[in-house]
Length: 435
Image (cartoon, rainbow, N blue to C red):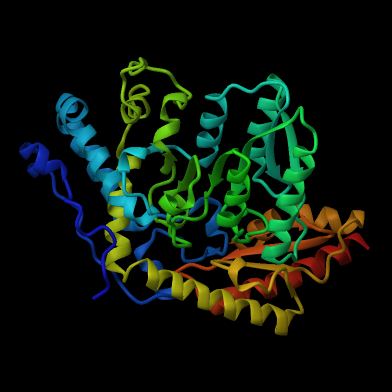
C-alpha cells in the first residue's frame, strides 16, 4: 500500500454534518484497468478523441464528476441547511485535506478561486504601487497573467520589467538572467524591486523553472513574490512552507483531477490584510476572517470547489501521486525519444530538472518567420483537431515552431506515435496546398 498524503486529517462528509443527507446515495469509487489506453474507462473521454493536450483544460474522472453531482444534490435537499450550516465546515475541511499536497501546514492560508488568472489579479489589485515600483515577469509568462500585470502598469505608476528566456537554457542561465535583471533595476536609486511574478512550470514552453532559486533572488531585495503554479499541483512535488513566497496559486483541475474551475490560492499570513477577493461582498470589514471573505462572494454552487475531495480519493485509489508522476515521466521520456528518432523532432530541453509531464519539441518541417509556414503553424492545432479529432499545442518560441504534448495516465506511447504521424502528414499536406 502507498502512503496517503495528509492521512491524519479527519474527513468530513455532508452526512457527518447533516444526518438527513444520508438519504442521498454517495458515488462508489471503482477503478478499472491499468495506466495507459485502457485507463480511459475511468474518464468520460470520447474513444475517438486523441487527447495530448491535457495541460490546457484538464480532464475529470467519472468518479469526480459523479461526486460533483452528489454535492449538488445534497445542496438541493435542504438549501438553507447546506448554505448556513454545512458548506463552511466542508470547504475548510477540504482545504485541510489538500494542504499537505501543497506543503502547507497552516491551511488557513489557503482559499479557493476559479483559476490561477483570478488569483494573480486578486493579489495585484490589492496592492498600492507608487512611482519607481517595478513589477517583474518573464517573456514566457502566461498571456492572461501578463495582461493582468500590464493593466496594473497602465493604471498605476508601476513599471514593467520583462526578463527574457529563450530555450534551450540551463537552470543556471535562467537564474543568472534573473539576477542580471534585478541588478539592472537596482542601479537606478529611484527604482524599487517591488513585485515578481514567477512561473513554477511555464505554460509554453511547458518547462519547469528553478522557481525556488528565483524566489530566493527576489526575496534578497525585499520583493513580493507571486508563484503562478497553474500546472504544478499533481505534476511536481510542492512545499510552499519552505519556499518563502508571498502568494502561490495552483489549478486543481489541470493535473489533480478536480472539476474545472477549482484552484487553490495561498496567501502568506502577513499578506492577508492586503488581499481581498475581486468581488467584495458581505465579509468586508477589518475583523472579517480571510477565508470567509473569499468563501462568500455571493451565491454559487460550491460543488466544484468540493470536487478536490473526490480528486484526492481518486488519486489515492490509483496508487498516489508518486505512481502517477512516475508513469507520466517515463512516458515523456519514451515519447521524446520516439519523436527524435522517428520524426526528427528536436528536444527543446535536455535538462532533467526542467522536464515533468510535458513533451516539448522543435518541429523540423516548419520555418518560423516564413509567412506560409507561420500561417500553417498558427492554424495547426485547430486543423488537426477538426480533421483528426486529436489535440496538442503548437507555439512559436526562440525562432522555431514547437509542440507541447501532455503525458497522462490514460494515454500511451502509441497515442504519441499516432499524433506524430498526424503532425508530419498534416504539415506536408498544408505545404503542398500552399506551394
